[in-house]
Image (cartoon, rainbow, N blue to C red):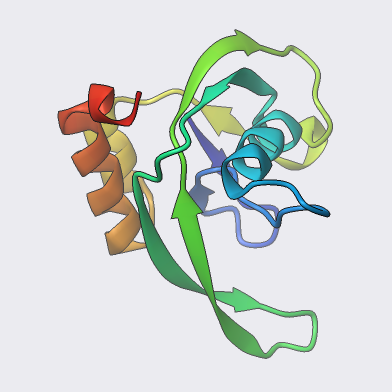
Length: 120
């Protein structure tokens, strides 16, 4: 599943920052719930990482590293925290890899989908 970013509307995966002493994979699962209404079991093994330029309110761009953790989706909510500010869409892995703006993220999606069981 891809979601739109709130600022530019580009297609992305749910992502965010860990809170308190939260493990990075747990933060990924929480963000999937908040941003896309997804619940399930998150892998403790990252599928990959990529960088993108995050635009700050000041207009300045800073590089951000994103670690991607697969989530086996068990529940899809009809209502969730950011429903009004995002669109979510189920697409094939090949389509998802083409839809994202970041080439490295597209490669991670393709790599993951070639053998998703390696992250179980």
